[in-house]
Length: 390
Image (cartoon, helix red, strand yellow):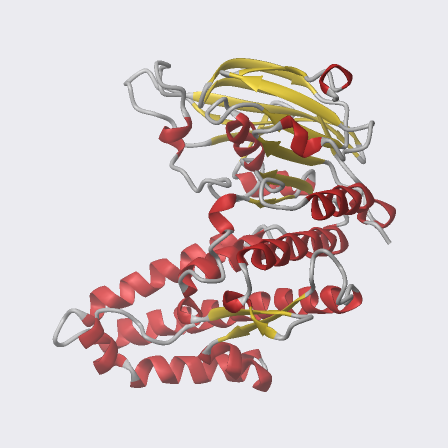
């Protein structure tokens, strides 16, 4: 079953940018479900999909500071707006920052149909977003921290509150670290902050574990050793995750006791050495039954694509909304067979998909209903496919 058959499939119908990255202004109508952006490196393709990625909790696909997103030469502010054709009708979403009269930048502003909302988490009622970028190509060989951030991004697309939960946990950890710097810390304060850390930590471990388990079930349904995008076996390893089998209440008390016992060691280390902030996402190439880090570069890319496709199906099942899928330079390192298979899989998915690639020939296997745009120095126009076929 495709995502579109099981869920509502909102569609971005118009993208409006003002002083965002390389765009002084842009008003781009979009009609297709599959949308490709092509053009030379540095033309602004990734900038456009980064703008789309701001309509979810977090800092977008580049994880950049807001000030970095403003156009060089502008006043330091920027605005991004979407006209969304959603299940309950048309809706206008907007976000950005403004230059205040005193010269400072405002905090991030978020609006729905012109009304201010408290945070980007409010957009989750109308749109969900998943993405794959070249920065993730080394995820399997990188650090455990990189994989945790990748997993948290997967979870955030399902549960918009997850980011706030992780932020609160990290703040509590920093508070405990400061207390432990004192040779004679206040035990009552330590007890209180460790209770908060334990409660938040078990919540984080639980939602991560649930997401991984659900992804594993989806992958099991797609097990085909000959598939162009192999299924992945996923597991999360960590001390707190191992405690979850006894139930959340018991796990919280065990984690709290472990923190209390570890105070001397953590004080010496300057940080907590146990908790979901030390967990790791383990991935194996399903058909070959080998660790993902031992697979070839091409196999790792195919694994990532498979995970993103499974994640899109999971987001749709969990939220009732087929997510917007953003794929930055995803086709560049795929052979022609896998490119064709990718486009078939994306067509079946039912989501709206935005892809980037420097060479327009990479999109030759896209169906005729797809839209291809040529991006040149912050300007975008439809690409005449027929004129460029050999």
